[in-house]
Image (cartoon, rainbow, N blue to C red; front, side, top):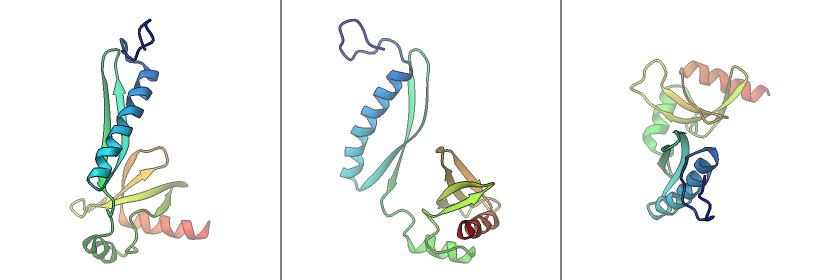
Length: 135
């Protein structure tokens, strides 16, 4: 990962280097996000011996609080506060992150516990919310 002089020059990208760079980049991006009233999360990445690609997602802090999103949720038969709520599908928990009306069949975007992003039908989310109540 580093050279023999114990300085922070990376000569080969490996898992440890990815963690080091990713953590440093996340801290730097947090300051930028705060400056503009946003939040930032590291999403995914990949690396080779000589390169690293890391994806970050910036979001407004009040995401999901808009009147339009609340109305959309209500029209779909979902609770107005659906964004940020947990539901279950296949026995696994998911957190609703968005409603995308242009995706008619799978309009609900959710994030799994391992960080993956998934699309769901409205009926599946409604059922999953009912399972949450039973648990």
